[in-house]
Image (cartoon, rainbow, N blue to C red; front, side):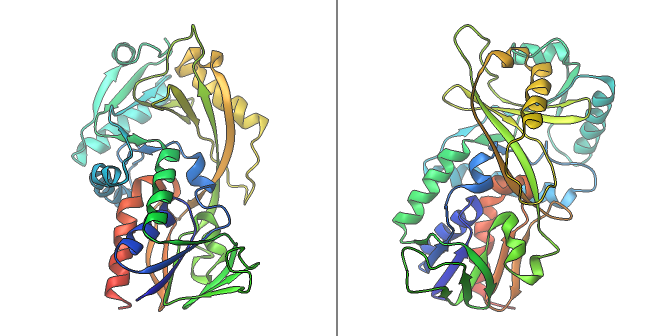
Length: 353
């Protein structure tokens, strides 16, 4: 196949376009704002172990395989990784029981997890508060600055000859992408013709092909970006995830000293407005874990739409001749980008079976 179109300019679409172009294909990437969307507001955790739960063994195996690919993937792009691991924390007995169950499950799957006390957690991260009761230390998890990654992928795509069409796609059929408006780069065209289309439009994928309408759903997540001000405790050195009265919260440090705080989960369609309640809840739960966070500067609030799937496992494969799906990655879009791109390239090489 020579002419390919990738619909969707998030991390998955960019990674696929980069790999396909590097393999010698002529690639057009179709997205009104490449590099934005859910990928722009992601936390950047590469954490298949701490994302796992009994019954989601397929997601754990997929994520673990992807994590092994990440060091070489990051090196190719010139992107740094945070390799200090993850602390998963509990602040009350019910939360501690949940973590104990998770630890038992992971031990049974052969995953490296250490159960620690609240005191031991505070020795690792002195900024943690006294209400932290217990936790898990997961040394193998990584994290990446999502915006650094997006910039690197955009540059790699451009250097590889990927052509960008900044127009919204409305439908996909074999060898054709229909556009709502002609792209500025091609004002005389309302369709894009190609040998095959890769649907990698995240939560919007469900509107592009009938086979995805019942598979992908939008899951809203709100995040805050914070910066430590002079005189306050610095952010943690590793990713911190916690349960606070059953509610999940995460804090991911960045190399510049800032902190990403997230993430709410709401199924409210395509709503991407940040709510006052979402900001309040994130800060309140974060203060239980990291009491000094209330003194941090609030740099940004944003919301994105994860591409939810029924079992938290993406769909990567042929929908019909001429149409490939690479969507439904839910919370693990960044994590699964290397292996998804590899799989799409292999699908194109093999053709429809």
